[in-house]
Length: 300
Image (cartoon, rainbow, N blue to C red; front, top):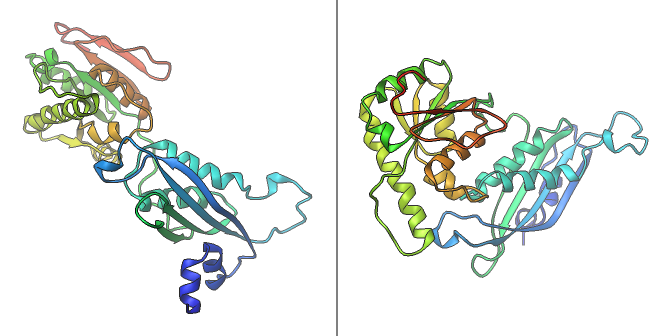
């Protein structure tokens, strides 16, 4: 092999040495860190775990003074494995590329980090290791606005959706001057399938059909399925109709599919400021206010 080819297929540390940058004197490395996790874009990759292998190199500047054997003065190796564990626990992902970017962003948030190499490989996909490797420096992290949004979440039961007060409730909620997300009830008459997994998908898609059916009601309405879509919509003054399938199926836990409990789960995920349940009684929460609104109650 040529020197270029050898460095491309060797450990990322070899790549780092072959790509010197000013100011880098030290390198931390993680080799052959193997974790079993559910990941993948294909249906066959759901409800199963596969092994991922992580190789990470973090380049740092030499310390300005004697460290005195003080662990608080260095970039700890634990911060690398913690970055991996945190991103794997955050949500189920389809792409290794997304996972690599998020790990790199989290490592580069450490003040000592000057550059990071992240290689992730699937060990159980085909006859060999399939993977991705990225190189990132500070400033190349995600450009998504990191300002935290704490929306008001409103659950609309089937009774609420059919009520003549619906528009009035939505106007009151939107007047709170906090981003508003509407979570919808499961239609009373839906399709049924054998098997919990198939039924879960059918129920989630049924809720999304209701959301799409409501879009024409108000110019401010938008259907949002991903965290990125929700974040953008809320920061741009839209009223979000949550399409739950992607977030629920990608969750690392197993969110409850009872519609009101699903709205409560969403409010928890987004650190909501409040949850209003119209036509239902929501579960209590220690982190946000919950309000039960009866169908004959015109003022929230």
